[in-house]
Image 1 (cartoon, helix red, strand yellow):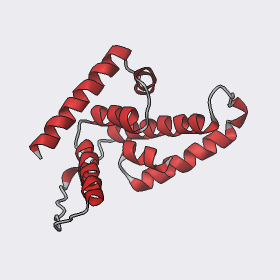
Image 2: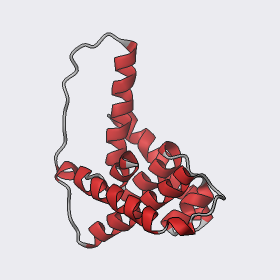
Image 3: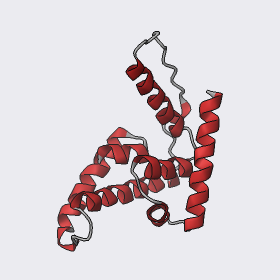
Length: 150
């Protein structure tokens, strides 16, 4: 749940707060839980909704993360292991995703990492189904271009 919040808000302290707040929300609203979905899915949805709420609130304040301004360059030590190489590639994709436009980053995170479908994402992001599909398609293309240019 922490990783979900972190990928959306991009701040570990805020992700911890969101996770704690989400658990409290779930506990106080436990009587509203219907067994239509698993408890984990219900809790995950609370975390995603709280994360997006806090992210939008942060955007209204026009706060700029230091990570968005600074660009980290990590040295390649000539690593020979395929596993480590794959891990570095995955890390590169995640770092590149952080540089995408915010709506692209959130949509891709929800779709590719969290496994939500277009309908769920359109509801979470409060956009139309068609706009959701277009946003994800454009986000994938933008990610591809940035990875190729890197």
